[in-house]
Amino acid sequence: MLDAIVRRARWLLPLLVFALLLPLASPWLHGRGGHVVWLLDLAVHWQWLHAIMLVPVVVACALRDRRWLVLGLLSLLPWITAAPRLIDAVPGSANARFTLISANVHWSTRDPRALAAWLTAAPADVVVILEVSPAYAQALSQWSDYPYRVIEAAADPFGIALLSRHPLQQAQVLHDPRGLASIDVAVDTPQGCVAVRAVHPMPPISPPEKVLRDQLLAAAVSELSVAARPALIVGDFNATPWSSALTPFAAQGWRRATALVPTWPTWGRGWLGIPIDQVLASAAWRRIDSRRGPDLGSDHFPVRVTLARAPSARCGTT
Image (tube, rainbow, N blue to C red; front, top):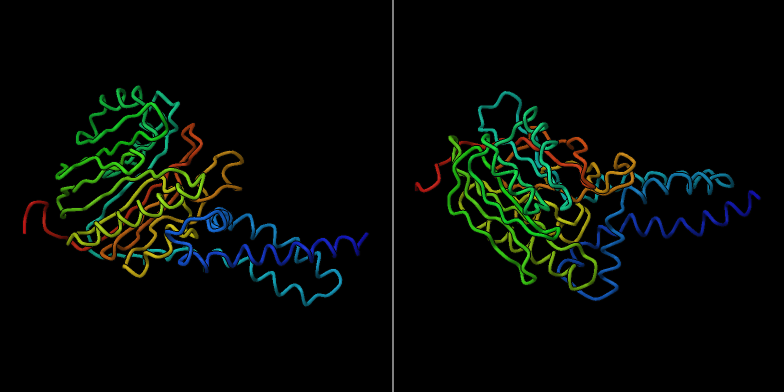
């Protein structure tokens, strides 16, 4: 019996080690198509599951030889191989603060009261809402706390909305080759202009969708990197911090503002899920706080980040 357990564990071990090392290949996988690349990118998302499975497998191997226990250290790899996190702000610094929320509310939801109650307790400067149905959009029109808004509702899971406490300038709705909407705005806060791009690419359900997702995020980073203002990309990326969709952007000065806590799916309190609801921040930002929000009745948990930056020029000024 013991020998059978050890044999099975030693068969699983190289597969799990390979899966945990996959994020190191993500820069090579970025933007590439083909079924092999697509399958590898799908596997790379589940780093927490790979790490959890590795522990009992290593223990089983160590029943015959304790030297196998050293491989248990590989369960720490998800913290190392994820896209780099934003540097923390210096405590007590006089930088301008900006709070951003992203909430995928599920397209079947018609009533925003759960989100409204959370925002009352934890308000933000800007709220990005994904999977906004026409009925949900109609209810949002009654909100007075966020008077500046861009809403592109849809009868499918790709409606999107951006709500702000501050005036919006240069607001536009962009569409990818499949017709999915993103929102691009300049938020005119009292401490300066902030560029925000809200996105919700197609899930990578096939190689072409994987390539389109990578291209959409790459275009957002490229376009916002040109602007001489602090910038943020926010939404349901349908990609984790280990994915080929995110890892190349560190070289351009972009960092992950959100934590590695799973946000989808919500069943089991999300512990077997993956972190696909994210915020990317340009080099101007520092992190004050990032956390997962409460269960709002969707299949996603929302995320909330508070960031800091040096005060800058208002929108429309030079």
